[in-house]
Amino acid sequence: MSSKHYDIAIIGGSLSARIAAALLAKQGNKVLFLRYHEATASEWFHSSLFLEKLLGTLGGRSCFVAQKPIQVISRKARVTLNNDISLDNELCREFGQDGPAVLQWLEQLRVHGIQLENLLWENNGLPWPSFKTTASFKLLGIRRKINWAELDAPLTDAMRKIPHVAVDFITDLMQGLALQKINALSYAQAALLWAQVIRPENLKEPDFSELLGKRFDQFHGSKTDLKDLERIDFNGSRWTGGEIKGGGQFTAATFLLGDTRWVDRFKHGKVTGLPSPQILSRQSTSSLTGQLSSVLATRVICGGEMPLRLAIEEVDGEPCGLPISSDEIAEDQLQEQFEHMAIEKSEKQLYGLILGADNVTEEQLRKQLEPVLPFADYKLSEPEEKLPTQRESTTANQPQKLVSLPIRIGANLYCADSNALLPEMGASGAALLGWTLAKNLINKRKSG
Image 1 (cartoon, rainbow, N blue to C red):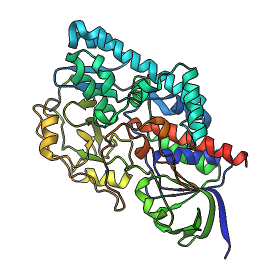
Image 2 (spheres, rainbow, N blue to C red):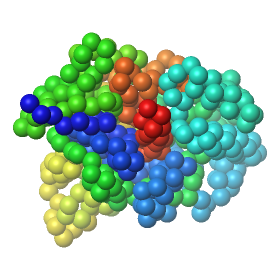
Image 3 (cartoon, helix red, strand yellow):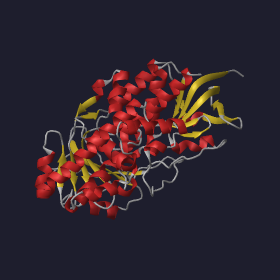
Image 4 (cartoon, one colour):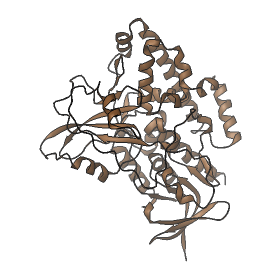
């Protein structure tokens, strides 16, 4: 029986996998992309150096739009993040004479983030998994006068320098941006995130997703439904190919696991070091029309014990808002989520889309939403159904170091799921991981 050969086979449609697929196909690689759903980019995350370079490479700079404000409603502070509003004034208003010290700490965080982003760019992305390349990356950082001990340390260590009055605000800010508990973040992760969040651009969907799909097809990439994948073959040392229902057999030199929730497709063979994906709770509110404060922004970080975000979306007949997430959601799922609201085609309504930690009770949600929606009367939808193959998530006890992310997880298998490796960085993390995989695999192929 004849079979088709591919340079790269990608299993799972995360955003980072889609980015890697487009870049690899553009460079002439024969790419097979098996996906169930295709993830989209979150509007919460702004530009980054890698997103900027990626859109330049793919010819899609029009996918950037002007920054949308983010409002942080903490226990004792309410701060708006927007380039049109002076952050200095915001912090001085909320923290008085301690405002300049808080601003200085955030500015130092931004500078370190830019330095680290430039270092990653010079390195072609994250360190490739080998002792030699990791050592080379660290040496490159030392030459750039980067303090690795400071970057790898927990963010909470650096927060000891913040005035006590602003600790809750910084905690809520970082937890809300990363959707991670503060003790799971390193200083490096927070620096990269903060440098990206305050850039003047946002990424525009669905334009970005359409660009990735268009470029993949333009460069002759092959797509098929992951549900039609009958098996993946393993010869005792590496994965060699597989079989697709109705499509015959195929072989592949390299495999990318684009969504770690489909790791069971690689049950024949050893997969090591694979982290659990970030599992988030998504819920929508019933109509909030006429119940919102005029000073409330459309994107809000809701301060409190758990990381929680709220987006206010306007709906006109059809659902136009997407849950704010680095994870994926299919259009039909979103449509079903809004069907129970019985919206007339001609009327506009405002709804809240909530994103936070998994397994959160309705009582916990309402308690943390109370300062944001103090007088609103609303109902919450049921949390979204998860994919049946999804694994249980685990909470990190220690922040993950950027120099030791488990990119290679098998003999010729690599992790292309930024939701497992860089969940706190959203679309920026997806661009960083996708770029890293594409550039290094292209170089590896050229070198033989």
